[in-house]
Length: 72
Image (cartoon, rainbow, N blue to C red; front, side, top):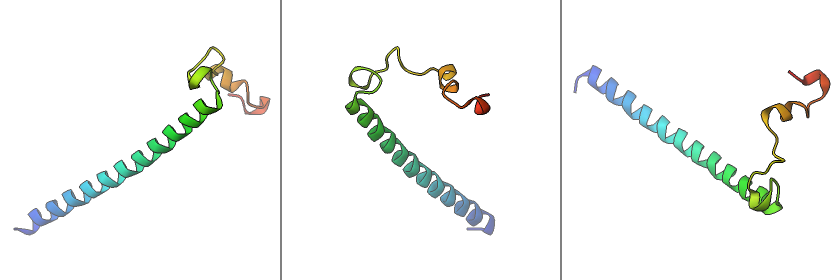
């Protein structure tokens, strides 16, 4: 194989490995989020069985929780 072809093949292999690594990272994050969601449901936060309720914070409600100097 010519040098240009070998360089392209190497770049493709590196891209595949980077994509696999990123996929593993995302899967790990997803498992953590799923575990956290189960714990929230177990504790009964957000309504029955972890389902959202009318007491959930909206984006505007979340800002009102910040100290006055940090509100946007």
